[in-house]
Image (cartoon, rainbow, N blue to C red; front, top):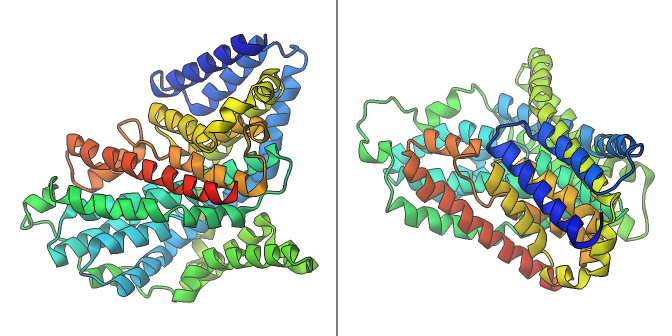
Length: 455
């Protein structure tokens, strides 16, 4: 099969995959692997070649990204368990001020979610949010949505969160270049500007229109810790340096390595330390030092075990996305797209955004949307005009923008925000769902503005 019939078969395959995940509640790993197998057969890949294609796609993904995902997730868990995430939030509160809870929650959410999953980040930071709302008597909904959006933007945009890491490795492998995580981080931060601004104003506006339980009754009898009591509940928080080191040190190492390489004066030891897998491993070492400073080294085994349980499903879903991408690359579809690439090239970064947004809205998981879209896009990246290193990095962010558009009832994060924010389900649609739509649009506009300068 080739040409238009193959494209139609591919569209049907994606629809079936979405239905299997979202409606039939089949695990994404099984859904993606099954669709990959069926599509390979329908596309005409020789039956004797299909096992090798699937094995290659699976193993290549693990080889390129598996360890990085595990180490990145471990950093996040260490920051959470040691109180370092709270310390980072505390630094933001001190800078922004306790009388600006929306801005404080937005910024601290964005910072904390760089290494920590947005779901976990919301749970960790929600007590701070409630304490600030109680102190300032401002809108609970406004601070809830500001925190939610801040967490969500970094979760979808900036490594070492597993979704962006996996997407970056898949896309760079598609253009045959070494992954430039520092460039992805830089574009992720740059493309956060408009969505953060949009988040802030949306939170303020929606906070005046929607009320949560603790807005309606501030004398509900619930005992809410003051901000100081919350900080004290962790005992002595780690130092500012140790709290930020697991994130900042890997970024500095990767940045220094890239700078020396661009200057044509690479230094072997810096190049070694600046490789993403080694740089993030150094971040883990600082996380373990952080754990030791809190006299909690005995918990390292359990923390590692917990991290492996959390990162395992992500690894397998990511590998399944890699299988789908390899199957696509093994069909005649890529050749057909090359012959008709002019039309797709006119869409630029909007093509991966739209595909990711469809997958996100349909099945709920941002990580699945990121990894699956990257697997689909990677074989055709060069043919649609996005084949350079900077454009590949920006494509990661475009996919991330789609992966936050939109969060609703099939997304676990929707329920975390709605329940912990003490909102009714219908109010969750007015706040979280509408907010992610606005932020997603602001994100792709920001991405497109950057695209105009680097294309």
